[in-house]
Image (cartoon, rainbow, N blue to C red; front, side):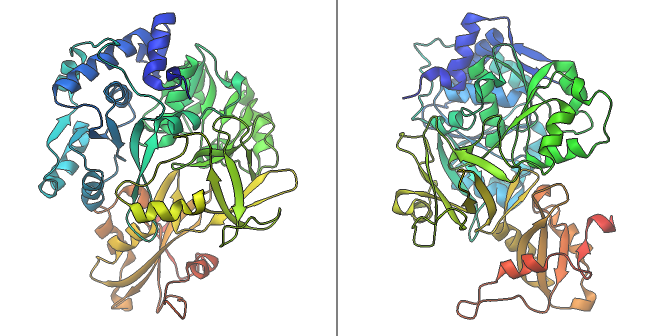
Amino acid sequence: MLDPTCLAPHAVARWAAAMPEATALRHVGGASISYADLDHRARAWAGALADRGIGDGDHVATMLPNTFDAHLTMLGLAWLRAIEVPLNVAFTGRMLAYALDHADVTTLIVAPEFRAAVAAVEPDLPDLRSIVTLDDATRDELDAGPRRDAVDLVGPQYRDVHSLMFTSGTTGPSKAVITPWAVMYQFWSWVPDDALGPGDGLYCAMPLFHNSGRSAFNYAMVCGGRFVLRDRFSATEFWSDVRATGCVTAALVGPMTALLYAAPPAADDAGSPLRHAILGPMIPEIEDFEVRFGVRVATGYGQTETGMAVTTGWDHGPWQNCGRARADYPWPEVRIVDEYDEPVPPGAVGELVVRSAEPWALNVGYYRMPEQTAAAWRNGWFHTGDAFRSDADGWYYFVDRLRDTIRRRGENISSFEVETLVVEHPAVSECAAIGVPAALGEDDVMVAVIVHDPPGFDPAELLTFLEPRMPRFMLPRYVEVVDDLPRTEASMRVRKHELRTRGVTDTTWDRDANH
């Protein structure tokens, strides 16, 4: 059983009593909130939201940029034990309507700049009873809310549902992962103990509509640290941000690490206050990265559904690996198995599966998707859909995705959803979406399309068609017009591994080269 102070609202309350003037949140622009103020405002927001009818178990979607509003909303809803549905702010059109409908959202809290996108789909959402536009007037109203004490606000326990987190689908629409608070905690609970202490700064430019941002915030609050945020990541501003805010630890993903390393070396690269980088995956130059910037690196592998199952300490091993099976909470069991769920020997490639004896420490299913839940939890193990191998020293190595998920700059993209939107173009009869290697790691999106009139087809016009219909991070970079798609003989399913092997060719249209 986890102590409540492992969860953000209770952790904030703890430090508000122990060191009320210490900074809890700091924006790189200079604004900050102390632990006492964060606790007071979070409880006020909880009271005001309760007065609007929000309570225990209600599904409340949020569509907020990476500012203090998102953190205050998260804490206010947590005190009410409501279930948050954090939405990517790039969602629009059908994807936005689907998420709100599928998650049975009754209240939406949205920033003014995204209100028009919501208005466009409101007629399709009869169960959405209330929309709270978080403008200046509403913020003032929430700050003036009735402050509830511990008698009125019990707050969450580790076994309570923290959120419904959308993750990309493969052969179907995106799935809403039922995520307990224990998962949110364990995402960062593996980080070495000396990475962050009370008062230390953790730099994180990842938003709260991703587990990476939410769990890092939870971790910083548990440690009594300063959570330093920026609206979005900037490689050119990273080191000046770190120096200005005195951060000792940073949260990064692979492309961010690659961008920082790709910058021209400077004489004072190792002279910043940064001493620790929590990142994944590692880049081939990771040891030189550590020396050049004077940092220690720890990494791991996880998913929205599992938290972090495989992790390292500061001794992170070969750059290609993701870590070893955790030996701390929630003490997960990890296996690499064949198609029959039988373990394979070291060196052999199979699917990574995970389970834990600790209650509520992994996902508890996909919301309103019982068949997908049963398939993912086959034989009592959660099937990650990722191919791995291990070596004799116990290191685990990611090999490939078994599912058709594409990962671009930290975003998981459903190939199914890309294909569905592309074939709505009147010139396209069929489409297969794949990920191809990007220069800075992860994937770029490529679509192979069969079109009705190849000589008259303009890939640039396809992109113009797609721009208002899908989030920007989903937009294909590459378009390849093909006569046919490679298929299996029995089911006629597209053999995407052949498309990935072929990759970008001389006939592939490249959006970046044509802008």
